[in-house]
Amino acid sequence: MSDSKWLVSERDFAATYDGGSYVDAWDAVEQYRRATSYAFRNGVKSGATASALDLPRSRLRTWIDDGGVPDVVRGLESAHEHGWLKCKYDDATFQGLNALVANVFSGGSIAEETYMPSFALNHRGDDSHVFDALELAGVEYDVIERGPDRANEVRPTADGSVLGRVLSTLGAPIGPKSDQHLTLPPYLENAPDDVKATFVYAYLENRAIEHEGRATLHIEEKRNRSYLADLAEFINEVAGGGVDLRERVIVISADAARELGTVR
Image (cartoon, rainbow, N blue to C red; front, side, top):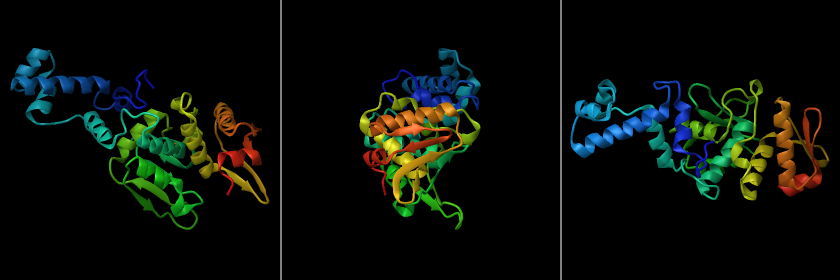
């Protein structure tokens, strides 16, 4: 993330559009805002605006004369409307976004190219915490039934790709997680205890494996070793001890599981 005081800044969000219509999407945002503001304030069209600001008239004609808006600007506008930009740790909207980031890591995905997120329902089904997270974040959604042998999924019905870009800006991975070098979201490093605890709870609700007759839990994932080590250390910090990484398994003691509130 940038040095912005906000957890999701406009510039970081805009960077998810780099390489599309514009090499530097943030540059397009600034040009659009300068050009449309100048044209409105001075009551002029694209030609006069292009001359005054030394910008290509062909681009400004689309924006000023035809009313066109770059995709990145539309995305910023939608993200602002939902309250997903310029959020802070104690905002209710961010509490939902934090849980959704945890769900992307542990039971969901963000599609490459489209940035559309989806979230698999865990063992709790209709009582899964992901519904609370979506409502806190102000996300409208549908439940997609996938048959008896596959977990149902929850997908946004409006501005889904914008949500996916926000989650990726926060550090959620894009595409298949087993094929990339994962790291924990940067915002967790300085997050307050309740944010860290929510992230861990959401993660374990999706990935923790129970043992018959014991409260001990474990997580077994095909992920890069450094990620598993950081995840184990992070869970251990939140639990106050009792979490260990073995070969490819994170073991959570019964006491740690109770401390984390994940004993079912």
